[in-house]
Length: 321
Length: 249
Ligand SMILES: Cc1cc2nc3c(=O)[nH]c(=O)nc-3n(C[C@H](O)[C@H](O)[C@H](O)COP(=O)(O)OP(=O)(O)OC[C@H]3O[C@@H](n4cnc5c(N)ncnc54)[C@H](O)[C@@H]3O)c2cc1C
Image (cartoon, rainbow over all chains, first blue to last red; front, side, top):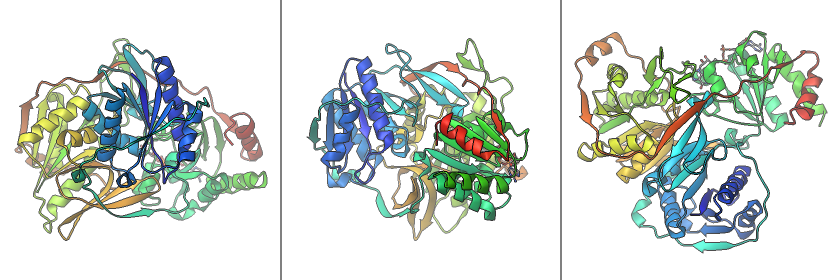
């Protein structure tokens, strides 16, 4: 009956989104009157694992095998399903990030468990199990009923929050049984863009559009992002024209993000753009056109030329620190 | 070698979402249907690979699980350059159902590479490609941003937060396509549209398969109350409000 959440680590460390996931799992388990089990895969030291108990992990299951240090959706799905079967769990929860998106569908087939992806809230009802998720990239919500006995959820970032709920530490080791022939993908190399704030994790995102007029005009955007410790993003035409990389494109056909603070600079606010950012807690729009549709979804607006507004704003924030 | 591209038939991205039947159904009246944007990128890349004679890709097919209203979208895929379309004749109940149907078709009709989009722009399930790879018991590449052939080896880039992995992999596998895989989706040319009429669009019956979930109701997000305008000469006020009112700085 228990609830299992998969706590992904990044080089042995957890992130805020992991703690949000554990908090959510704890809340769901309490509603179901059952235990919260947290599964960590790969090498994570005990003090880091211990952090999970602060958010209510009744038992932390650590599956360590040096072959598990590189994430493979196929192998991780296998490990998770072994643990689910061993524990007789009825719910599996993953974060709605790259790895959660990759693992959860495989797990769904393995366990014949219905999957609700990118859920946004606690369940609306437990029996039948109905839960809210985004559809049309945030233009609407759907209430999905999962009909199978086992159920899988992936949790959208910033949809539940982190809730402290300290319980005593209980770590159990688990050695999965893995056939050698599932280690098939050969990773030749990994390239990391250094010292950039990762868009998916960022609390603040500074995003700019065609209003910047040219790729060479991005310095003020970078400067504002840098003083705020923010990630940079852009609208689709900006990445299509090669002014910025594809990884920065947000919107219905790019990344869907939900930071605390989103700056939309020189972005008109097309429906496809807004779909990807409207779950931001606070939106600030900076645009020369007072009629720009972006102002109808923003919390704060400034009518003005970005090339003038941005350096001033950056200076005010810098001097206020 | 053969590539199969999964095609989802979705409302145009400019569609304003509305509901009927007490918010139980989407109101599709007047909606324009398109190839799911990521599927279109996957298809474009598959055709580029086929056209490049230095590799051994020689056939691109598209597959869809849907009713006859999807045929126009499949014809468009043929017009863009796919050789053949397959439609498994059933209402696509959920991602598990769709992936299971395609997997069953693949049992007797194997392909070397199966491509799907990273998500469909309607239900945002991000699931069909991953589920399919599990049904097929083969590797899947999530967030694939490059698919290329170098010295007969298949080279793949996978986007990871803040960077990319460069991988090598032998077929069969499922590639789950992210933006970057190609520059721009292809649009059908007149000649392609003419040729598409003569290309095969096979309708095959669905197998008996349950779905694991269904949607009971829809809802629209609550609209923002109103935007506070700040004078361009009062930017200090903006910073103050972000700190004290919105509490996001
Ligand atoms: C299938 C499909 C999918 C799409 N998906 C996405 C998506 O995922 N994400 C996305 O972003 N778009 C998407 N689009 C494109 C979308 O429709 C818009 O074309 C796009 O968002 C517009 O980008 P923009 O706001 O940067 O440019 P524009 O619409 O050109 O707006 C530029 C804005 O800058 C303002 N401006 C000009 N000069 C200045 C200045 N000096 N200072 C301040 N402001 C200035 C202008 O007033 C204007 O509002 C999609 C389109 C289609 C057809």
